[in-house]
Length: 382
Image (cartoon, rainbow, N blue to C red; front, side, top):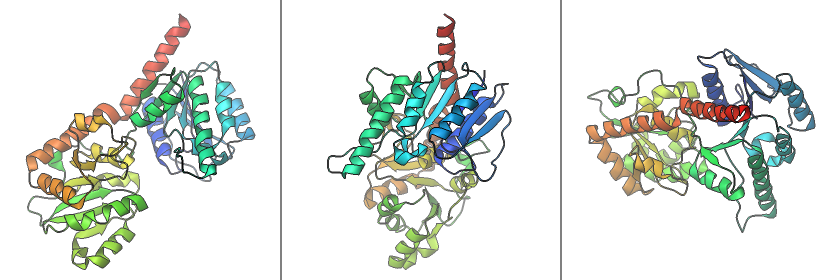
């Protein structure tokens, strides 16, 4: 049996879906004789190679020509192999309204079709402009079409699953967590992490792309943390603007506030594990689809985060992270409390890594996919 994966992006193209598909292809082909075929738009430069993984580049544009090439390519391998679609509405072009691709999927009647909904639809709000409302409605129609055709549907967080269930109540949607694209090459134990014993400062790390929403959230919080002379803050990601803004108002904190700049995912691991604590705050709360949060869990470093409308009970039930409110006072209290209690911090880091291994590791996704395909094969034989 071979595997076929359709995706709008794949390395060397950047993006979370590209990295996830790379990890999935690598895991599906590992330790087996199975071949994995990636169907993705052509790129200008070649990417990294994987054993038993074949990348088939198609025309750009996601239009009629692209679908024709996809049809011809898949036909060479027959229809018995499972087909996996990495679904993000805006990833397939046509201003995020590629109904043609959705209808093409309905024609794949003889294939075992699994769809991973990385995102579902543009938000629908009563006061939004007409063009945004149209986009939101068309995205929901697209998702329903795909849901009704797929043999198996997956998504990464509970709020997405709830939306999919509303769009197609008779379709079962399973959770499949997203793995981290940050490699850790050692056993992630809290004792191996953090600043060396006797160091002048404890390091609080923040891993982010530092977009406007998160930067606005962090700007009043970071100075509050730095009021403690025993703490330094390391911003892992492109945060020079945020650092400059804070240091203009608080020049006394410049020696203890730094940024790594943009770091490739393959090099992020040591940056995370050099921290004593990771502070991961989000405007919509801790969510299992956040790659930076998942990487923080995988690091084995204790994580402090916040509740929001996307936060699932999973994190609280497993005691895998410490929660705070998004106020400077609350964040500082939780951060200082953990940094002053090595045993509690160690336990939190171990619990975070254990949650990652149980729920987010790519081997869990592969196990889910193999189980669903096995069920389909048995039902066909019967």
